Each structure stands twice: as C-alpha cells, then as structure tokens.
Image 1 (cartoon, rainbow, N blue to C red):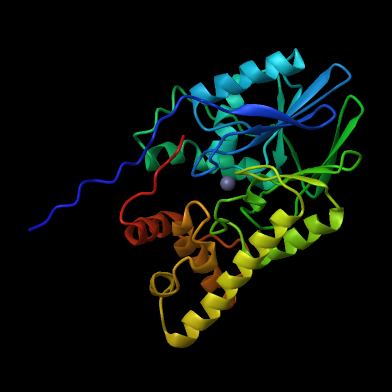
Image 2 (tube, rainbow, N blue to C red):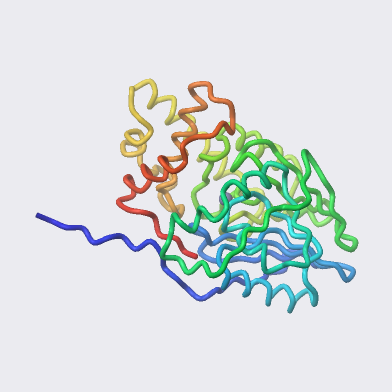
Length: 312
Ligand SMILES: [Zn+2]
C-alpha cells in the first residue's frame, strides 16, 4: 500500500510587493511571482491626491501595501477601486478606512456574497484579522475618477473574469489596469465569468491603444499581453467543441489535452474550471451564468493531485 503525503496548500513568504512607476505619478504594485493570490495593484498620485487600484490578500500584505502607499504618496488614498470581488484584490480594503471604495455594482454584490469564503479554501494561509469591506460607491457601465489631473476611466466590459469586472484606463498616460482580465505569465481564469465575454472584453481593451498594460497577476507589459490571453481562450473554445463532439467531460478533455503550449504559465490546473465554462457556453449558456464553483475547485484539485499552492 502506498500513501501520498498531503500536498502543501500554502507557502508563506514575507510580503515583498513593491511599487514600480510606469508613468508620471502612476505606479504598479507588483507581487511576484503572480501565482494564486499574489496579485498586482496600482497607485495614482497627482496634485496632492491619490487613489489605489485594488489591494491584496492578507492583513500582513495589506499593511505592507499601506506603508508603501503612504511612503510614496504621502497620504492615504481618497479612492480605492476594486477591479473585481476576488479576495486577493479586495481583502486588504479594510486597512484603508479613509478611502471611498469604488467598484462595479455586481462586484459589490459578489463581494458581499463571497465574504471570506476564500480563506476557507486555503485555511493554512496566515490571512490575519480580515474584515470584509465592499464597494460603497458603485456604477453600471462607466465612471470617471479625477485624481489631481489624472483622469481614470472605469469601464465595465461585461462578464469576463467575473461578472463585475472593472478596468481602469488612463487615456493621457495610455496605461491600462486590467484586473484579472489579463494575466502575465499565469493562466487566465474565467469560470466565474465568461470565455466569449473575455474575448469580447480583450478586443475592447485592445482598441483603447494602451502602451502599458498592468495585468492582474505577473509582470507589467504592453499590448502583447492580450495575445497570449486571447490565444489561450480560443484554445479553450476549440477544446470544448472537440471534447463535446468526442463525448468527453471537461476533466477528461483536460487530462487528454494537457496545458499544451501554455505549460509554462503558472497555475495550469485552471484548465479544468476554465473548460467547464467553455463547455457551458458551447452548450448555449449565457455568459456569466453561475456554475458550481466549489465543485469545479474539487475537480481542479483532483486533476492537480491536491489543492494548488496558495502563494499568499
Ligand atoms: Zn481574480
């Protein structure tokens, strides 16, 4: 009889996030390596004002982010935009009590419904004493924030990574904060949103003409980041069509196809829940219709041989 040691579910590291200036007064807050729960954020500083785009997953990481923001901006943010409800982007909201938290109307509802659910998925992570803070200023399609002279356009591109996504577009600096609609060096993830919606959103983002793209996870890049994400999503649609024709389940298709050309991206096991979304849409599901996410995470863990490592 053989026994498999339990896979580690957490690799705790001291917070090493850092601010990188990508345009005058515009910063990306980067947390390498960009795997599960190691997300990016953003900071806009101008004219004695500042605004934050997203926070981070744990209390310790959030306090580290706050220290860096105060050091760079000299003051706490007046606005805090959440690009979507996921805990890695929102759990740190509570360490910025001075800020008005802004998000899409669906992100507010999704954050309230999710609560601290993510902490239960990875109980070994040192989450700290978290307090859920949901957006208190919401919008439906578009909204513009003015941070000093910086114009920050909030755009909801429809169901994509989730159903309540926001991207932040700075037209003058041509910088785009995409949230998790774009991943760099990490696998896209859309079981809570839409494959076709993500492709539609990426086409919309591409048309903005960004020079600098700050992804939700991974290093800052340019519009070439759209290419990998689009190609990955198209492969999902292709695999779903082939899998359905062959009578295979999403899990069987994932096992048979493997990560293919995307083996180098972090968190390749996302293929399983992503395929569930692609299958649902191939069978006519409306983009963003809820799927059984806990069941999909269970299948993903089965495919991966254990719960994937949370890097927070
Ligand atoms: Zn996310």
